Length: 607
Image 1 (cartoon, helix red, strand yellow):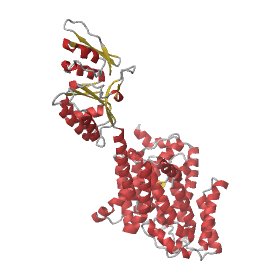
Image 2 (tube, rainbow, N blue to C red):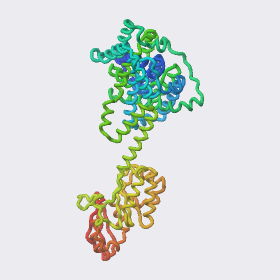
Image 3 (cartoon, rainbow, N blue to C red):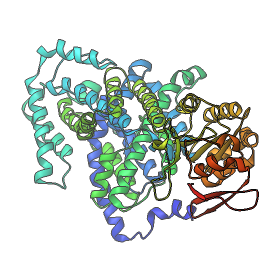
Image 4 (cartoon, rainbow, N blue to C red):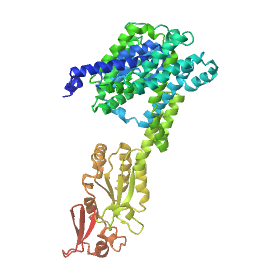
């Protein structure tokens, strides 16, 4: 069944009409991908043709081998700060090696079935670094938009901002005019011609205007990076060494992690738009292979592109053939029109990237999270600020660590350990904590409601609550653990401390334990130490057993009346009879039997 889905499920019900839709959507997305591929490459610090190579090779392989029917792969804006930092620090050749290593990591993630783990990355972290990346991209295009000259690119945001301020007096009005034409066209086209790709129209119109009226007054791709070759580069394996691998393993992991997040998020968006379901592990393998092959042809790291995938679906895509078509279209454009692309002004690329940054900023979600003023707001703010002012690696690491700490605190706050007794005013005599008081407590049986995960963040509080609230040593300690879904070894260690302490003078009873905590106790040997006969499915059975173990002489004259049986036990303890207890429908009753065999007044207690 699985094999059928992998190899044929993505083409289920395919027809001639489906083929026509795939071709049309592939052409549209391919046309859109050309300016974006060049723009992302330039913003990443490499030549524009490397973005085109990535769009062709990675685009085809991701569609061919990935786990989504509609995914469009290629260079994306999310990678810009990472790739630019790697190019600035290690150089372009090492970027290719890092991309290749990231591909290997992605393949391993897919083979190890780690696709589902990506969903555990907290949303404040993803929104934080996505918004931070958007700010970096937007600010990075200001020099090209204004036509500033003499601006040097740096790895850090503040340094780049400082360069803009220093060179603000070199503003080129022709560049602003070119950028304005492109920006206006991109914004207006969807309203007037919704099926025509705005970025391409904006690029063409602004390039024509600059070429015809002021060709020598604006910087172009050709004047800045040289002419774009009209062929694919030759196959070449980057020179790898142990030292290089050791140096680049960190950047490679960041590329792989971000690539996995972006591609799976894009696949989820596609699922929502088409009511389909992608294979996350296959998607990671496909992304990995694409990122291993692409650097061999001079391409930069690629991932699933959410906007292009959405456009693909809106134009009627029916299968991965649309993504393959999009790559072939870009290849034909490269072979036929590369010389013309060299005349595109850099000012024309700037507004396209600025709009990409604006759309990916998640501004509505960002401000909504800020307004909530919860712990998630702190995670969001830290991740965002570290992304903008330092780097994405530090931002993700800090965001995840902070999210884990906050999660741990939340879980520890959920953990409640409270002394409890049956509530005589409740119809079902529920065991509740608010019933316990200085004058209403049992000196011999202490019952505790334990609720929440018993893990490292809450285990010490659990033990302290029990040890500090018992000012005497009861004979019986009953722990109601039906609401403890999880226990780790730290929780087990603190429970073991309690058990060993109370076992010296009495016994510990446990009711309602769940399978996972029970499994932990069996593995550590604490289950055997407590004794299998001291574990009960119901609290009623546990109290039943506890009542049979109490010191009946101590009950004589007791005025606490913690249980319904206490009035009988307090006034008739001298009879020293035995007890008869029974349980039915979540309730139990105990009656003391006189030496002569007559039953004393029965009483009910809660389970």
